[in-house]
Image (tube, rainbow, N blue to C red; front, side, top):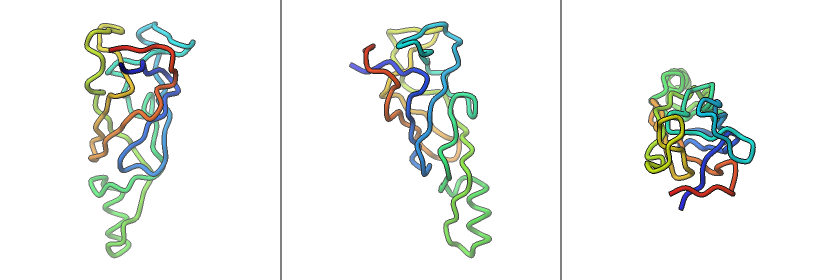
Length: 128
């Protein structure tokens, strides 16, 4: 079984250089460990999914431009997450009419990164 993911969960991006904190907005009015619980729509860039330090994806225009200016030497630039919704979530547990977010869910960044949940923010509530 998976763990329900809440605000303050730690996330990582495959092209990011630092972990980030998921800040779930309290839209579903459901809490666990006194923190808002997320659903698969809890992926709003800069509001819920915070930057992952520096980005090294060549699909990111800022990284591509900086790398070209450095004569082809990969030059990381600040992360600007462009995340999709989380998948797959927990289809049997609904929060705010959408599947609940669990610690095995992933989101895809528009620049090619895969965002995963390293720590769900709480360990008491298990969901299928």
